[in-house]
Length: 258
Image (cartoon, rainbow, N blue to C red):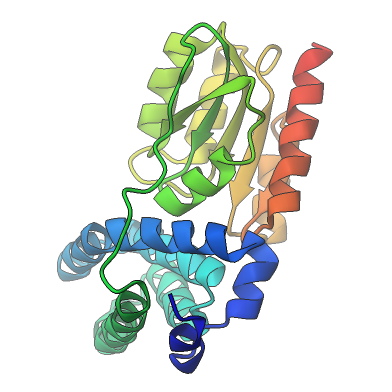
C-alpha cells in the first residue's frame, strides 16, 4: 500500500494517525469503512428521498465521524453541514447540496480503493471467547468506532456489541449480572443513547453497571444532559487510543469498587 496515493488524494494522514496511532490500525479502520459504506450511503439516500431528517442526521453524523478518523477532512466538513441542516429541518439545503456530498464521498472511495488495490480484509470480528467471563458492552452505530474501541478493552474482558439502542437494551437485560461496563453512543438510530440511560435509571442499573458515554456532540447542553445521569464520564469524538484506554480504565476501576 502506497501512502502517497492517500496524501495526493487529499487525505490528512497525519491527523488520522494522531487519533488511530499507527498505519496498521489505520488500514484496519479503512477496511471497516469500506465494508459498511455502501449500506450507509443507501440509507442516507433513502432518508433523503423520504425527507426523514432525524434519521438522515444520524447517518450523516456517522459519516462525519468516520471521515474525521480517516483524515477525509472535506468529506467530514460536508457531512457536518448536512448534519446541522437536517437537525434544523432544512430540507432545502439537504436536497440542494446532496450531490456535492455524494460526489466527494465517491471521490474519496476512488482514492482509498486505489490505495488498497481491492485487497480488503475481512476486518475485526468481535469474539466472546469465554461466555462466562466479565463483559463490556460497546453500543455505537458505527462499525469503525465499535472495532476501534474493542481493541482497547483488556483481554480478560469479553466484548459485546450493539448497533443501536434497541439492541443495547436487549443485551443489558440479558447480561446485567455479567456486565462490568457499557460504552454508550448517544446518537444512534431506533433508540438513542439517552433512552438507554433512561432504561438504566428506571431499572436501577447504575448501581451495578458503570456507563461511559460516547458522543460527537460536545455542546454544553448535551454534555450537561448526559451528566444528569450518574455516568462515569463523557468520551468526545473524535477520540484517540489513549482517550479510549483512559475511559475504559476509569470505568473498570469504578466497577471494581462497587
